[in-house]
Length: 361
Image 1 (cartoon, rainbow, N blue to C red):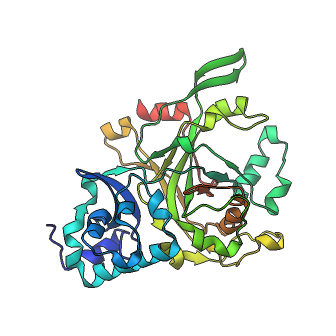
Image 2 (image 1 turned 180 degrees about the horizontal axis):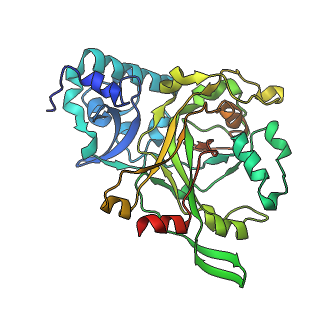
Image 3 (image 1 turned 30 degrees about the horizontal axis):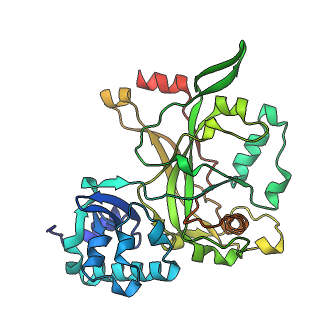
């Protein structure tokens, strides 16, 4: 059994994995997969904790904690999720002896992809990104007129979802060159650092949601890398949108942060568009988040060199439009266990071939 120091909860908070966080993931154990909750350098096996009779008040079946993804757990609903979170916090703060037999070192776990969505929606939520795209030569300053009055997004490819740390295979496709159309590996591979919002439950066909339903339907957030092959996209995207260039990889983090953990970071939105009454929401519905992207390479590791910090997002992130996005998209989403909402498109990290080659050597 793991021995805990008297300062272990304080150390957990200093690591960003304290009792006010408690992100959820899925790990592979010798007796099968199980949902786990991170606390400091440890993870709690929820399947074994529930089987021991310590999670009875949240009314989530033990079988939901012994799954290869979060789908069955997410369908338990906001009330049961809140009860589970409260019960875990009480154990950790007052009765940790009940939890200790179910603790594992996080670094020793084999993590699985926590999400298996039936669908996900990629939203065009950053005004800075929309304005930059409008200034691109081929777009002729065509800022989307609809952007300021309604959420813009498209249903993306759920089959491309993969866990953090997966190898990315450089996609092949057709591109336009000076000598004609060529078939080759992409030379313009990049990813966008985004934030994914995970939905608890599906709606009935034709069912509409109000913006105030946001917290009932949103379980939490994941960090997300949205990979693209831009040269392939430039050739294939018109008129129906990207195909091979956006269907090969969308990476999500191992851990899903509950939406309750973000409440201390709520703030007034940076941008508050004039929308129709059915999309109106509280102005204090943004989150002040700080996100960092770093990159390393084989050449950096040989030197050795620390990971290169490419970008730090220190400004307030306006994700208040998420409630609007939820309202708009879930009118058409049916029989889905979860969906993902990508909203931080302004934090784009370009990794074009020549630059990466100079790093990898």
